[in-house]
Amino acid sequence: MFQLPFPVQDANASSGDKPLGNLPEWNLDDLYTGEDAPELKRDLDWLEEACATFAHDFENNLAGLDAEGLLDCILRQEKINQIAGRIMSYAGLRYYQQTTDGGRAKFMSDVQEKITNFTTPLVFFTLELNRLDDDHLSKLMHQNADLARYEPVFDRIRAMKPYQLSDQMEKFLHDLGVVGDAWERMFDETIAGLEFNVQGDDLTIEGTLNLLTDPDRETRQAAAEELADVFGKNIKTFARVHNTQVKEKEIMDRWRGMPTAQTGRHLSNHVEPEVVEALRTAVVNAYPKLSHRYYELKRKWLGLDRMQVWDRNAPLPLEDPKPVSWEAAEKTVMDAYNAFDPRMGEIAAPFFTKGWIDAPVKPGKAPGAFAHPTVTDVHPYVMLNYLGKPRDVMTLAHELGHGVHQVLAADQGEMLSSTPLTLAETASVFGEMLTFRKMLDGAKTNAQRKVLLAGKVEDMINTVVRQIAFYDFECKLHAARRGGELTPEDIGELWMSVQGESLGPAFDFMDGYQHFWAYIPHFVHSPFYVYAYAFGDGLVNALYSVYEEGAEGFEDKYFDMLRAGGSKHHKELLAPFGLDASDPAFWDKGLAMISGFIDELEAMED
Image (cartoon, rainbow, N blue to C red):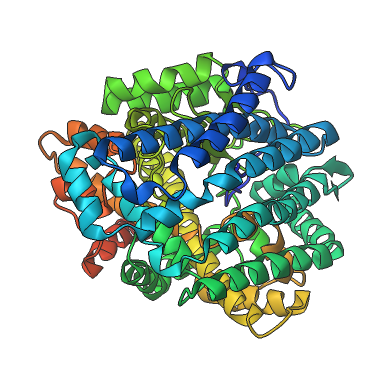
């Protein structure tokens, strides 16, 4: 099943309808020039024929192939993935530019169905590959170095071997995938179509979430209450989507014999469950010294007796409300990237000049931000909803980091370029850290330094604490759904059970906040994705500490790590830096960096 990119909802929406400069928009011509482009028809026709021929040539024959024959099989499969990925990237990116456009939605759905039909005969490939004897496959790879290059691909495919169903069942599930996609589209279109009215202004969800960072507390409250009201009016739809998607996953997992709801994600991330559990435990145990401590500080800065949920991302009283122009944002990020290594700036530059970024907020556009790698013979595209807040600058640095990573990994080819989610956040979070440090070094006063430090701490809390709370919510949601249908109230109770624990005693929770699970797209599009953010942040904090210590050759090692894409396990990638994510103490190092920033903020109070 070829997956679409999905909008990753930023934990902090951004601001204002003030002049921001000339915001770039996508030019998708490098994929296709339109729905009726002859190249698109050519590729669809090629794909249909290539899939049929592949099945004819290789089905029931994998066990008899020699090393060269298996390599030919792999290369043909890779080419099919590339063409199918190119088509779906084009359809998906056009759709996310305007999810409420019926024509774009139909085009994407029609193309998805065609590709699903074309590729159904290919399901045999992984099934037969997993039936090969380990010694036989090892012998073939030993005979051919080009084939041996794909060993990480074989390892990931064969990790699913214990959970594989019959050939007929696997083909059935492959065909059925378009039904699950329809629920995801329903979620996207419902979210994009929501209308909010705050203090007389009609807004999209992005504009309304943005108001939660407004300097005026009454505006923040009005926005939060409007979000709660609109989510509440649509909560039955969101509950139906979540119930269906979670039940579908439970059925799949039960038939496959997966021991937990999280197993599939861990396998696809190529990460051991105990490593994720060590991360989760370290973060939950650190709640008191991270989020609880920081929000108590913020409560005092805001002059409040109690914090409300609409104060969580409020700007500090010292913060400059002037929006950051697009030109200034570009310069800030590019200066930081170039200061680290001119090679990074060189890779990032075309994103700004060649239509690889779609920045403005537009009616019907998907909320949030993402970087989509498309395919290895084109280039990535970055989507933002840029409204001029300092956090938007950080989001630009984050998504551009993904883009740089995807460009560097493309040389690995279609099957080896894709980085597991646990490592996919490395370059993005590192790009944020470079930008933050550059801005911090440029701070001219203690007040500016305090605002920057507080903003970074909030981002890190949103990346680590909030995402682990999301992960705990998902774990509870999937466990509870196994006992039967969940009402909106049931889901709301699960949501609230993690919010108080993670945010801490400084907060009160408004009536209606129990509905705020409804708009998070990860829960629908990619279950258990969220821990990758915390994994990435902890990893980068440890990585950045090695960089700060002046480790010799760090830049070259860093580029080598990004170029590796999905060709190496996290242990191999981190070893050159003297780091090991399977060591429980590893996560404490990353969390200590956040705690250290809060220490500095507390010292400024003295």
